[in-house]
Image (cartoon, rainbow, N blue to C red; front, top):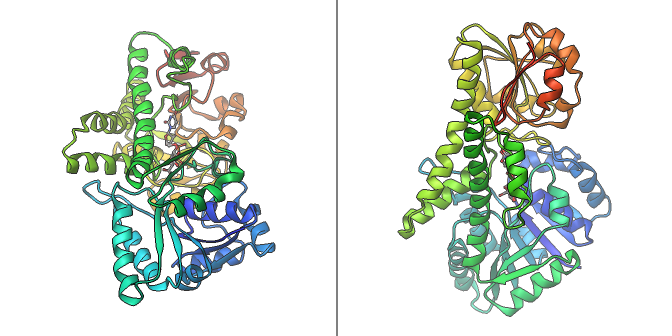
Length: 439
Ligand code: UGA
């Protein structure tokens, strides 16, 4: 078992720490946000992630998981140091690496003996080189005999299924510069029994950005085809199924809708485009992915207006606020963008989300937040589905039809079955599927 330090108690860091602790390692989970650490010590999670509360509680109880604000203490006690701090988007699309640099300086100041420093945050290619240079300057001024390695080990977990994704990965990617670093990471990941790609740090860094960009591309591609399906009386669900059964294409990440959001795809895509520009490589393909994604929200508003005409003073009920189901994360949520557009059209919005309401209240003002999905639809001119929570599919839609002023549904996530909706008397509009009118 190893002594591990994970710096950054965000989505990637906290899950990494909790999962390694669960596997029996001794893990120090560090964050400079004292309130976050104090809350974690009380068992209060900083965000909603299924299973995380139980997993961290068990780690703490077994004394495998220790929360601290002290990088120094955590680094000193660990052999492997993971960097998992945020790399937000700057205005020009570039990744902001200030948090990474600050952490790296603190690591350099704390190193007392050999450490393997692993970047787990999504970072631009060459960040590893900067990390090595920065630590090297600090450490070698103090004691040139102290050795350390830098490695890259990108994380591919998704919010909402993060623990399963972490513990049962499709692949492990490590970028290393020494045999010693490779051996440590092989030993650490051996129990996962997953295929391992071992490469240099630059390739590993590119794998992460290229993977997220490719998945975004896949989503924009299917959204583009959905537009054609709408115009030609075809069904995007069947088209995606027919394409996805080809193993070279694959069925996953082929759900058409109001576009991708969250703190990873939009930011990583922008950062990757920036990297391409800086390197003199034309990433116009990815610019198009961004453009298609941005247009989704406007097209959805157009679809609504084609049915309801003016939105001024129309009452609209909204199911879903988070950027996808099973998370309370509101960052770059397409639902939030759609609501802002509805507000700018003068519509009166009432919304409900199973987990994201508290956060949403701090971000979206000028709308009503309902206590239940049924309260959302009372007297509304139409219902909009913006996030694909399972529980929205399980509601009593005959009751919803009665509560709405008119039984009109715009399903931005293709969550419901058009035939069933028609049978229940709805005017049902979705993405890339011919409209089904029950009236
Ligand atoms: C994404 C990647 O899937 C992870 O592999 C990666 O580790 C993570 O980013 C990261 O870089 O940290 P995540 O942002 O949690 O994970 O969410 P996804 O499940 O990938 O969904 C992203 C967005 O795409 C959501 O808004 C979702 O609704 C949308 N989406 C996804 C679609 O519109 N259609 C699909 O078929 C799939």
